[in-house]
Length: 206
Image: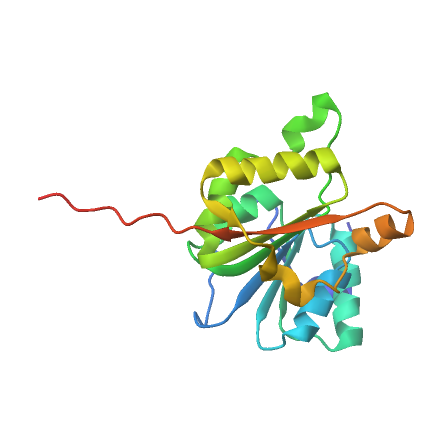
């Protein structure tokens, strides 16, 4: 694939397993996991210029469009990552490093033979919990009612989160590209938020 000028603004992490180095620990950090061409991500970054926003997707063409969008909107507080979602959450973000994760309208992989591709399953919820800061928030949205129910059930059954929708009230007006598309087709997109429950500290025996 021919390199384009936009690629200089994209960190290519596909096929890599490396821990990201995060500066300024006092910053509020948010991640849009599967950002697409980034209408939600760019609007979020523009609304909160004092925060660090991460945008992640595996499709390079989408990320190039996001680079162009950021330039048009004068967004300067975003890091764009080309990476697979499981690798990013499981291996690359340090413990307790993110304040909020957005996972919006992921592919529900509705056919039985494809269900292994679904990201939001029980083992992944523990990794989401690991990378969120204390009281961090996981924002989940889907237009597919079955996947929405399954994802929420995985989060609920993990015992690691409590559902508190008020934690996304500040961004209720910001829509992802997929949500805009589904709403135009008359589909409903369901949103919820899950706050991390910190694990109890282990006691040290004597």
